[in-house]
Image (cartoon, helix red, strand yellow):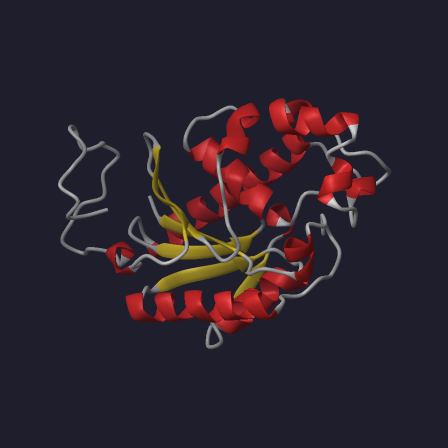
Length: 232
């Protein structure tokens, strides 16, 4: 029943120019660096007691965390939340890719999309391995730090969208309805009965409501009527 903060990496030159970076070792551009520093200020102001920080191995995520959490040295790297392996699509402009027959499948039926080339991955496999990695970490941290632990994972847009879709009980074919901007924070709480998506694509909100409340018992129950807004 821990609380997970999913952080997308800051903007890169490939994001800005509309190129699919995939596993290319791109870093943040000036805007992305500023975004990472800004999210770091939000995290510092909230004084969240992070039990763990997990990162995709790609440089853009590692750089984001180095700027956002410069004093957090014990960062774990997990291949399970690395970017989708887009195969032969990697490095190509999105405007060009939109003319490919596969594009329509990616948009309407991503669960059936398999990217071309020897390194191409299916979106279904991408989703399954990312969800498995996150839920494994969550169970591990619940056992070691308790149900009120807060932790952070830095990953990529499609990865975070797949994790959110799972948390919402959505089929992967619907995940293109979810938006995840660079350096945004999405917050999920897993419980024995269900998961709660507490924030989505947040680029400027106060994160202090996610500091654990020691006097409150964690629950799987939803607030009937929508709740008071006084707690998360």
